Image 1: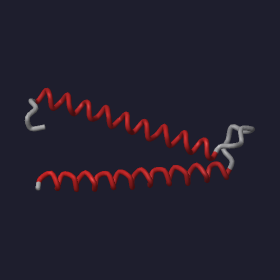
Image 2 (image 1 turned 90 degrees about the horizontal axis):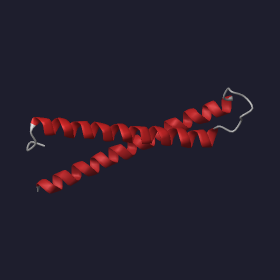
Image 3 (image 1 turned 45 degrees about the vertical axis):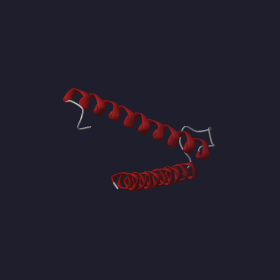
Length: 87
């Protein structure tokens, strides 16, 4: 990154931000798709049932905890790899 001039750094940062947004949207879409398909079963009312509401809450919490854990493990592995590369 130090070898890039200011404009190249700005362009690189923009690409990184776009990738992060795309990753976030993929995560969000996956969460909505999975939880909706697993939890919403009653289409006779426009309102969620108590069971559906509870299921959606638990599903979203579980999905986000899993994503956080995967992100943490990825970060740990990345740091380990960076340490190994410096040696």
